[in-house]
Image (cartoon, rainbow, N blue to C red; front, top):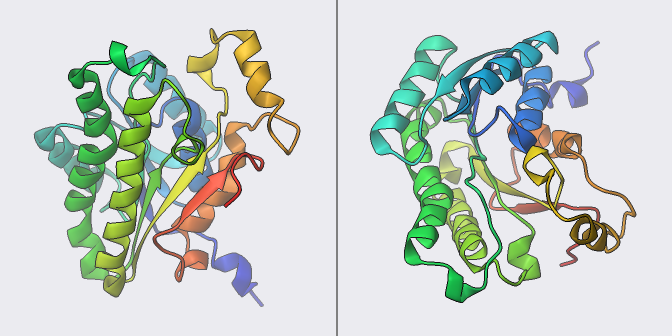
Length: 257
């Protein structure tokens, strides 16, 4: 007899779109969804060679999916991206909003509004555009999963990071508001807030800064990208059907609410 509790975590028959998913945490989450049975569209904007290698590795892990290139902050591009995914592997059931630009730490006097706007474009405009594009299908089938990727820095109030924190805080507000709006259609909207998990773009970060952060982690170790696998599969699956408007911190205990 099938184990119903395990079946509730299966994503077989589902289609996922993960933005910014050919490197870093996005890549790891895409693989986790693929291994759980979903067909996954890996999104990227630059670096074709890296994207093609990511897709090859994704398929070598036994996963099924496709690459889709495009700027997730541009309305025309977003419609094209969602259309290509729908034509290539099916309409999007699971949307993971992960794409991010560079995140330099600077005193507020050294930021300009253009940088603030870029943060808002990635963390508010892009989630709005993509959710709006995917919701008609989700509403029609009365099932959908929208998962925002946030950050612990909103709770921790990290200094010299106002632009990023402000935009991620706004994304969390979007997460909460949209969750209550679409709940009647069986659609959940949640957020995962990772801690600092070193990936490729952190390779040149100062060793003393890294060690200072690691020393504060109650779990006593660095997080790794695969630490997000359970959270992303849970929130994408039927196992979380009564969980919405939540912000799940995955950071070894760095934030306590």
